[in-house]
Length: 220
Image (cartoon, rainbow, N blue to C red; front, top):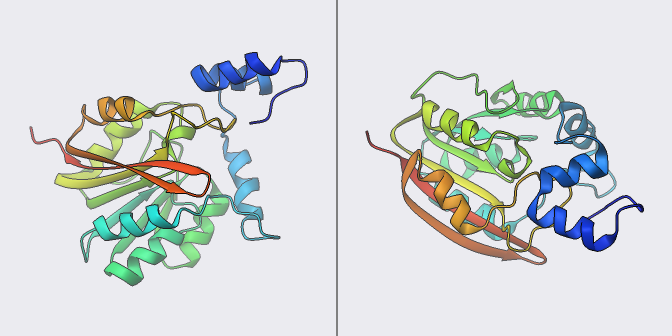
């Protein structure tokens, strides 16, 4: 966690843990630093000199791939450079689509043969009830409107469609770029508005603690 020198460390730590958006405003002068420009720069540097714009979480990736049914029509929300879509295509013969805030990331995803669109959540520019599966990895913690994003994800899912989401475990997460901390109880409460059959797992990859939740679109 980074913070300006003029903020006492204990104040910065408390804000970052309990009011991450306020921390970003105090530290960086805006409520959410996760702009298109921010992520364009990050994805332009991806895989250069050992830098990664996304964290490698082997056990999370393996479990997510296991959960996705074969031959699914899959949307990756926050697709980045399309690496997960590549894995799903190879391992599950998935027909992959993507959406991301970064035009740099989307261009890379398209080069890999996937249909992808540039959009800022909560907007998802795909038709309703189109996808059998939606995945969203390490993205919701960066998004201002989580509730609206989950509603959009439910909209584009087919009836009883599968949704798999991963977020950093908010009980230990202190990353300054995150505007939300998701403890398990909060994650379940948010998901339960649109989804059911919710199952949450905790994965540990080195210093990274991750919550992985699988669920199905709520039956009305």
